[in-house]
Structures are given as structure tokens and as C-alpha cells.
Image (tube, rainbow, N blue to C red; front, side, top):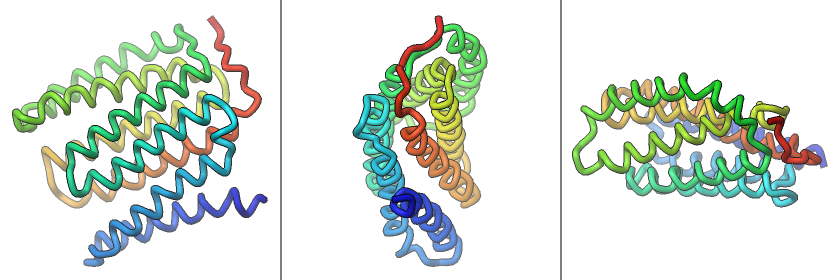
Length: 219
């Protein structure tokens, strides 16, 4: 049983490492198959941790399914991938509410997140084509809301894992945006991919910690 729970983590990590090697060594034909394996890996992690056994896990799984769709669509159609990831964040927000929101914690994080969001928009939007301004602004708003609610759900151990996953996701997307709109150098991919997969794996692993959690948050 322990092997079945550990194997998806190992497969996902190895696939990410192999994908990065392929990207940087001329093995472009292997990149998408390895992305498929890595992304399917984080779904398997959530499922083997009991994602279907409670609302927190179901919402996390829903968010991860959205991420999987974004991983498959994004390399071929960036805006379709963006839409999939935007919907994924609503799944994560649902999970955070299922775990419970401590509004005082959320409000403590609000000034920092607001500053980061405004700074990110001011830095990025001048580089974004007019036709993509709406979707990009909407995405930054939604992922910032996701991080806001993650701050609010950090009142227990599962919430702290969720917050870590949310912040890693946010950081990875900053490098995705830089890669897409500001600087096309490969270093952005070498940073965003491992940070992104770390975020998805952390969120998937948080499902196991959520078992037995009441979903009640302190006032």
C-alpha cells in the first residue's frame, strides 16, 4: 500500500527532471510525453491520498484536473491553457473553503497580496498584446484571490500545506508570464516548471492531511 502511495510521487518527480533535461538537450520530442506523465502523476498522488473521500480532496482534485488540462493545452494554445488554469484556481478556492477560512488570517495577507498584484499588473501589462489584456488581467486577479483564500485557510496543518502550494503556484506563474511576454530565454522554463510541479504535488499531498479535518476555522 505504501508503495502505491509513494510511486506516483517518484514518477512525477523523475518525469519533471527528465523533461527539463530533454528541454535543454535538444530532446524536444520527449517534452510533451514527459509533461503528460508528470501531470498525470500529480492526479495519481491526489487519488491515492484519498481525494474522493471528502470535499477538500474533491475540490483539490478538480483544481488539479484543470491544471492537467492546462498542461496539455497550453503548449499548443496559450490562451486555452490560461482558461483551464483560471478554472483550476476556482477548484482550489473551493478546497480552501472546505477546509475553513479564518478571515483574520486572510486579511493579514491582503496588503501584501494587493501590493504584489498591482506591481505585477504594472510590470506585465505593457508587454501584453491588446487582445490578451482581458484574459491576462482576469487570470492575475483570480490567482491573487486564490492566494488570498489560501492565507485564510492556513489555520491548520492542511491549510499550511495549501498555502505553500498556492504561493509556489503564484511564483511559477510569474515566471510563465515573464517567459511569454517579457523575456523568452529558456531560464524561465527551467524555473517555472519545477516550481509549478512542486506546487501541484504539495496540493495533492495535502489531501492526505485533510482526512478527519472538520473544516471549521477560528473566527
